[in-house]
Structure formats: structure tokens, C-alpha cells
Image (cartoon, rainbow, N blue to C red; front, side, top):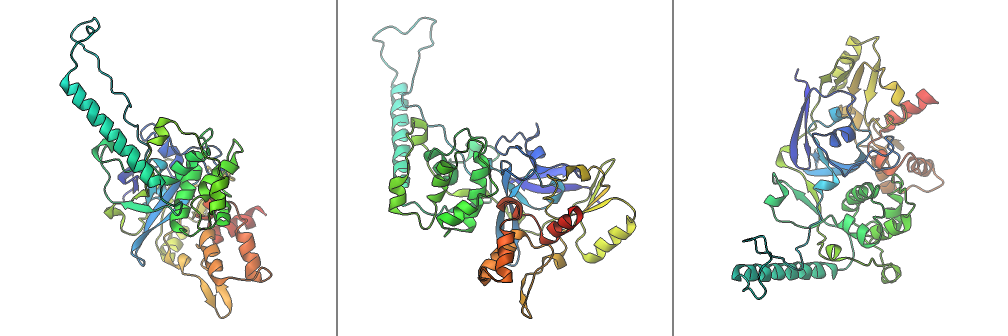
Length: 411
């Protein structure tokens, strides 16, 4: 049995040989070998959203990828087999605008160029070309800004260049762009978490209202306490953003760098090689082991073989941040995400709502929203409580069965 994990990070294939079962995605992303500075690790408990990334996978039934914002501080690397991880660096980038004044110094001698020396025709041509390019960029930015505020578009990217300079610059993440233009970036420490959560939310909910957008940030914390500016920038994507809202919005006084930024679509690098099912992973170090059964029969066999050992069933792993002391004692992690019986589609059967144990809280909330239960009904109460379990980013990964067992254990 091979021991390793292969997944995709910002469109590039990543293979890690026999990763430690307790290696978390955020620690890998910020390790010296990867050195991504976007996602942070502020709380390590899934409570602040500073580590948010977008996790994508291929839905074979719908024949398209699905995307969810998750906490990378809670996701083990061993639970990424065949999946796609996108950090803020992969969703678009800001450009350094061309200098307004192209400078040139003669270097034939150590002394300055003589006064009145004829200017090089090569330099004069380069200066004109730089001026034309700068004006064309500003024209493109002005045309883009003239469009009506509304939902952000998404662009799936199948091929990513080995180096950013090898492909044309399409523009920056529109969520980050509007956050900055509405004075919402502030110290910048939490900005990436807000941007990644909103990027996933708006592409999955293009008709979201201002209220729904505000509710989506129950898992993000701003340590500058500057939520008004952040929410204003995010609400410009709302379907009910009005002329009155735009009039009340406080515009940002821009410098020449921000004036040259072109807002683009939310880029999600999703290579063709990722169009397949999630892959089971096996790994082991000196103290712990990770196994991924793909059927109830295989799960039963693993539990039988390791009877008497300290075993932990893992699904969303969202309790890791709160109960960290329980993990060092675990000898075997059993990842049950890929067992089909735990993910049957829910619905009403014989006047009862039936959902699988592996259903995430976000999927349950979506199911209840389609059913439109009354506030005073049992399903209405269930919807009320589900929306108050952790924050949205945690709910994107937390399973009903896993959360129920955690409550029963620590009640």
C-alpha cells in the first residue's frame, strides 16, 4: 500500500510522501518549502477565518467542480487526496503599474551626462510606448469601473504557468479589489480570510442579498473592529444593492497604484487532472497512522484489526482546534469522508427528514432552505440551531454525525 498524498495547490500538482497524520494544511502552506503568506494562523481553532482557503472537488453527477471555503488550520493534509486547494494567491493578483516617468541615465562614464546632450531615439521610443501602455491600462480600468456593481464572475483555470510572468495579467480578485476601494483592508491581517470566504460565497450565491452576505461572515473576525467598511465593500456584490446604498458609500481616496488595478473574475485554478473522485490516503509515522476506508465493510475490518487501540474517526476534523489535547494520544485516524453510505442525498421520506451522518451543516441548511419550514415548526427550530453552530466556514466542513458525537462525548 503506497503511503502518500497527491492534491492540487493553486493549479499545480503537489505530492507528499508519507505525510505525518497530524500535519495541518495551514502549517504546510506556511512552511519554508511553500512559503505562502496569504493564509494566516491567528487562532488555530477555526474561530476567526484568517486561514481560509477554497477547497474544490469534482462532482461526477453534475459534471462540474464544487467549491467551499474551509479553515486550513483544521484540515489535515492527509484529507486532501485528489482535491484542489486555492489560496488567495491563486485567485488573481495585483499588478505593479508602469512608472509614469520612464527614467534613463547615461553610463558611459562616471560623470553626469553633458547638458544639452542629444537624447537617444531608442529611449524616446521606449518612453512613448510606456506612456501608451499606461494610458491603455487606465482606460481599461475606467471602462471596468463604469459597469454596474453586481455579482462577481468566476473563471476556472485549467492551466497555470510555471511563473506568473509567463502569462498575461488578467487582473486582481474582485472581492479584494472592492474591499480595498471601500477602506476595508485596514491592517490587512484578517483581509485574506474575508476575501476567500466571500469569493466562494458569491460564486455559489450570485443573487445573494445584503443580509445574506452579512450573515456569511459569522466565521470571520476583524481585529481592527472595522466591520462597517468591510461589509460595505462586500455588499456591493448584493443583488439588492441600491442607488441609495451607493450614495451613502464612503469612497476611498486612491493613489496611482490602486488607480491602475483592473478588477477581474475570481480565478479558481482547476486542472483537468482534478476531474476525478477524491483519493483515499494512507500514511504513518513513528507514533500515528492514517487510513481512509471507502466502504463500510473496509471500515469494519479496520476497526476489528485495531481493536483496543486509541482510534479516532475523522470527517471534517473541525473539533481539532478546541480539543487539541485528544489528538496526540490517538494511534489511528480513520478518515470516513469517502464512504458513500454516509453521504446519501437527504430529503423527506414518509413525512420525516432523513439525512446522512456525513452531511455537512451547510448542506443541511441548504436543504432546509429549499423546504421553507415555518419558524415555529420543528424543522424551523432545526434550521435556527444549525445556523448558530460555529461559523459558516466551519459549517462547510463539519458533519452532523461528527458534531453530534463530539457533543455526546463532552456533554
